[in-house]
Image (cartoon, rainbow, N blue to C red; front, side):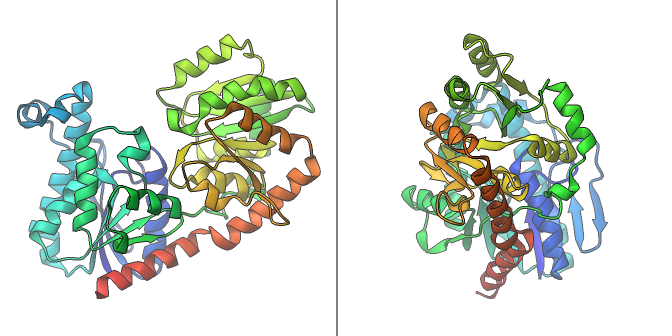
Length: 411
């Protein structure tokens, strides 16, 4: 198949989970014999066009037009303030990409399918739908309501319109499917394909143990200390503040324990203040920066339990990474929760503990359940690795995605 693929993030520009997903799925779709023409962001330092094998990349240079957009924007966009520049970049990427695809690239070869990822590429998708008779797949990795509770009406409108106009919707969990149906998205269009994890990268055999020792010295981890680890955006829905609230309760029973928090986000200052308020600066390390994948893997390796107490998580690749590294996990399983579908909470195949991320006492209970039984924790980790290898590896993701793409293109 010839596929036009629109995604805001793509290597070397990666910001979050969407970019990780695109960097994993696109090469695997190409490996299955498809030709992909990818349209993505240009920070001004990258080539506007390049090709590698069956993957052709287009990165139109952003045009600055924030002032002009402010003249014609609706009331919602006017509330964006300084973030209107971000919307300008999105609009510029979308409009220029759609124009290049419609006026130039689609005239050179016949495409079978157009793929749109999240609201960040919906403007291009809607323009293409209006101008070309091509089937469109809309990947919904999250919604504005899920990310913020309410948020921008402009974004919600773009998401909903793309959902209505697309030939098919693919989302990342059955929990997200239920969420979309509750918002009025067309149920008959919604398909579920779970995300995956690169089990060849995320495994103990790949750990740089020298780096692990360096991190232990950096964090002043003493012999015998247990490590609780969180990695992710420091934002409200990830439950990081509640994790900090829970930690004094963990320390009462397991005083020889440290919590490492790795990530960036708007909650950073409030989390630092919370750590000071509880007087646990010597027990909680917070590191607000992006790290290399090698260092990410090293953090998983040095941990005893990984905790992701989100209370709105469409999927959550981090728990797959932790399980692939044979680590037991404690995950938020209330509300919208892709974690709930990944992590087996009981029985012979148990991989972790389900908790309510809004309840610090429940988070503490989950952590203590793992710390009090090292042999059981080890078994959870081994079960987790087997589960990721069998159900959540990237080849399964690519084949399941391709099955739906072919079905949609034929219809």
